[in-house]
Length: 140
Length: 382
Image (cartoon, rainbow over all chains, first blue to last red; front, side, top):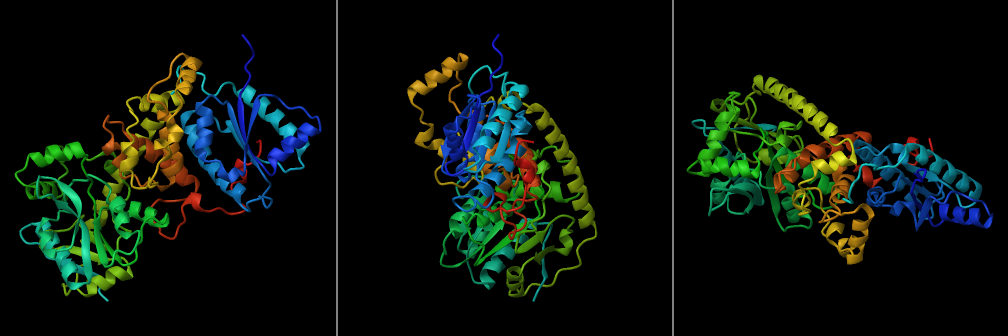
């Protein structure tokens, strides 16, 4: 059997983390291909619903990543994201979704090296955790 | 200013005494209309009714164990804009809490209105109430049987199966009302006490010319303490059982297996207030090829789809505002004990933000604000 390769959905903000991903690319840094980036204008627009959907559709890990505190292009979207992640971390583990599968990070536009490093860590950690919903026999 | 007045009760007839109190409130203050549970002219049933004629209050029945809907939703309809007159509403404690949540979310207003709350012994599910009401000639007779059973101090309520939400309720006292009518521990021969809890309430009681209340009966405190203890035990057992049954996504889908996506729970939920829910928009009118793709992925896809997604999303969207009224369970056509599950989640999400839904109007809902320096533990890779 093939070794387990986790699928990770990352909601990254246009202004910071996506720009960092771009920088990582133009700097020819490599990071695991398990991460699927979804560019959003701000982490403040990531409805908890998106995270739930990602897990139910088979994601093994979800990352939300935006600007450092004080750097949000929309002033405070990242603080709102932090409350929503706090909320999700109270709900999801009740139903067996480990809190280590949901991460929130701040990665600034110039942090290309950190971006590649965090993606590497995230994939390694999630690989260790194994599949998120191994028992699911049908899409529900 | 008057703090508390006495409502005289003749012949153990609580309901007539309360009706005349409500009529006095309407006649002696400038209240244009009162939203109050009232029996229907056509059938032995109770529904919230906006009454403008004080004479009609002899059909009001706030003591009935009927709880067909959470009145907070209806009160929000009446107060979202100025109604052109002062209003009053007679509500259960959980309806007041739900209304407070709606007020915080700018769906209704407490200006220019008086909330009269009653101690709440609990309510019956809609189907149980129908069966109970049909055993009696008139709705009044049903209510009298109910009052005798729950307020006489007898503990034998076997005929009255309160809903799970009511058995687990830890706020049976209407703390959020302007005027609280105290029923627990009251001796009808001495009358009932109506106590003002706010300036608005004091203003109303001052105009009524009713005699001041006797000292609160000594047994009131012990009765309430015993009730809270009993409910706490029930709640803890309920939470343990639900947590065990739903500790995986597999377990959760077993718990929700009978769900047919009718969304009645959402319609009945007093704090689920969006006028258009995303689950009924075209976002969830998937392309036919999408269903086929899902089916292929695991060999099958349950239809209707998105059942778990719907309930988990509702938990994320409204659990911080959940007041535990139990209307989701009441509305479920397939008897899923939804409120047991939602109150469990609500306890954790509200606990995480140190929030109690509906109790304190000055406390902002957790998702309506932030501080710059908080919850550092959810950020980063550790």
